Image (cartoon, rainbow, N blue to C red):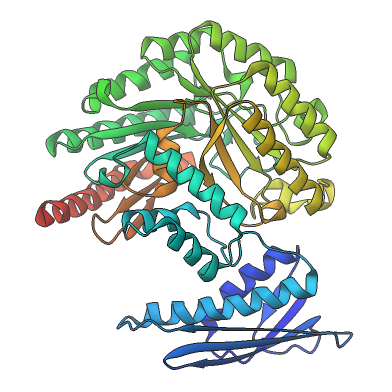
Amino acid sequence: MQILVTGLQDERFLRPLQLIANLFFEECQVSLNSHHDEDLKIVINLEAKESVRVKASLTDRDRMEKAASYEALLIDTESEKEHFKQIKTAVSHVYLKVLQEWTGISQKWGILTGIRPTKLLHRHMKMKTPMAEAHHQLKEDYLITDEKIQLMQQIVDRQLTVVPDLYELQNEVSIYIGIPFCPTKCAYCTFPAYAINGRQGSVDSFLGGLHYEMRKVGDWLKENKVKITTVYYGGGTPTSITAEEMDMLYEEMYTSFPDVEKIREITVEAGRPDTITTEKLEVLKKWKIDRISINPQSYIQETLKAIGRHHTVEETIEKFHLARNMGMNNINMDLIIGLPGEGMPEFSHTLSETEKLLPESLTVHTLSFKRASEMTKNKEKYKVADRNEIEKMMDTAENWTKEHNYTPYYLYRQKNILGNLENVGYSLPGQDSIYNIMIMEEQQTIIGLGCGAASKFVHPTTGKITQFANPKDPKTYNESFEKYTDEKLRLLSELFDTQETLV
């Protein structure tokens, strides 16, 4: 699909126009200059003075025409960036409307293409905006449907129940620890994840660098009396390393980090059932870690084989019961809607199998075609359900979780996600993941340690986020972890010096 948009000279419009077009068309190219082979031509008439007025008219190859208009007052601002943002929002309104008219597809998230919609509602909550007014603004500003606004409100309410001091945690940090190894690489994955077999030298070197990072950051936190809210071991699959290596890693955490006994939550992803052993569960128990993930993704064996997961359905069930019997009392499981070859019958089977286990929390992902994944590079090999069936599966998941007393507590979206839907985390009462809330709502600094781990430094007053990422591959990480650690400590010092000055 080739789309020509005329009437806009500023190249800054191109990216938002492309992102919105991607919501409607699987393969699409938007241009502000004619190449004479466009499938759609959209003419934008823009006038911006005291208010911004935008009209859009769409014409296709068959001369079918659609039109839309929008007008809004411009809020006075000295910031050119904020001024342009208001105009960009108005242009996005009419652009979305004419594409909805032409395709017959309604976008429930409106013009939103970012991954954290609930942050918008949190902003209103912090400003104490009346609920009805906040909802009205979300609908008017972003064209979000009532259905999605209600979902956002339910999640925000739950988060503030789970973490009542969510808006007051800027003086604490959470920590993400990335272990970049897995038994095999899944076809949909773009996380730092390297097949662990034959890599023991890389593993040893990596763990040496990780221990160094943990010690140095821990020393800084102790010296500056900064508390840790949560710790999350992700990856990759953190349980890919040996039980002995896990034991040493958690011992390092208890030695290096301040007041580990007071950390609200420590989670270890044990997502691949084929990495879970009695010995590793014993190590988790030893260090008082009882929140883990065991991720089926699907209970269809053919699907697991197709996406590169080498465990069996029976192994998922067996390892869940093993973990439960060994005292793991907060187990999360991930399911993915829209995996290759799966429709409603297969997803219904996966839910019926989940019903037999009833983990404390459940994250329902909608498959996303991530740019660097094996699945995206070979789309013809991985056939997925159409938009209508994907929506039915999501509706089924929502109804199933409600019937089984699960409540949504966090939400995020991704680019190229099937059906322009979302990923939703559900939990039973009192079993919500605090880390998932902290990473999604970006209310505090999160320090990333290990391979591919991203740090987010959140400014205490403006909320501006400075991102800093470690190298993704073990070799580069092993060669440069000291340099990256020093840079993180510099950014931390700058941030907390700012907070002390404000106090």
